[in-house]
Image (cartoon, rainbow, N blue to C red; front, side):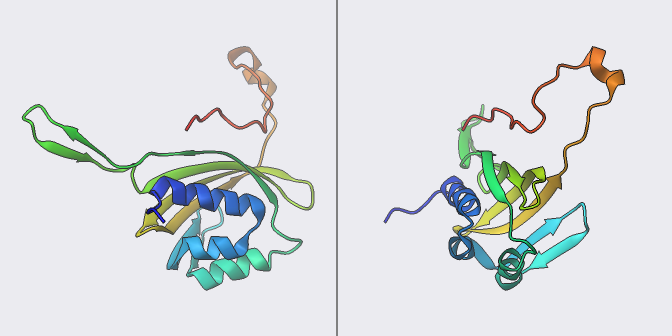
Length: 155
């Protein structure tokens, strides 16, 4: 079997999240996995704690729909002096965008910055963002769209 790219690993993770396939998620994250939720100030350390949370979520985890993954494999470019430069910051870090509907009917945006190390996901910083009503005073300055639609991200 060919070695999976970092992007393929993140894509597998996204599919496993959408399928609520906790066993596959467990195989795709490192033993020392760390996930942070900046909005609540919580940090999950280790695969066991991550799995305990998703498997014991009150009412069950929501149903996710991926909006796409942003990021690309590492690149090397030739500089003006014919030196090879490794362009970093994209090859192991990806952004996963989704929306999730919880069992109580609430619909939220999810944005996760995911870092891959040695073929598995080692770290994630995840924001869960509730929708809010647009204020009327901005109407003359903005274009309205369906608030829970996901941006066109491309590949």
